[in-house]
Length: 178
Image (cartoon, rainbow, N blue to C red; front, top):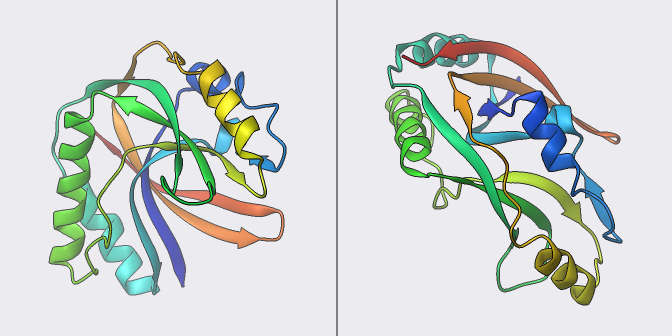
């Protein structure tokens, strides 16, 4: 079985800039720079035949390249105990257009549609018993966080293996944008 997701990678300089703010929160398990990505669609576990079909069909997507900026901070879930600290991206239109094309192909193949509304973000940390006051200070101290814009010229299909040391991602295929 393959545990799959589709994502846009952050360029190394942008990932390094994001990592510059990843410190100082008790109970935060920070995502390493090389693991940071913008998830377009989490697919989940599929067998080898479906994996090969997905890998092939994603190559049919034809959307233009676009620019993104990493910008803003927040957490999930919004009205409960925070579990995930994230940074957002802007503008959202192009990301959503690419994500919708991916979703349409997957649903057309019989993959269950995504159950929740798509909210483009890059996970910075998983939070465990992080004091609310500290999280609020972190968010206030970084409320103007933004990187330079960067070109998105491709997206990727990854497999992911969960281990006690965290998730390990393997690049399975890359797809250029127009």
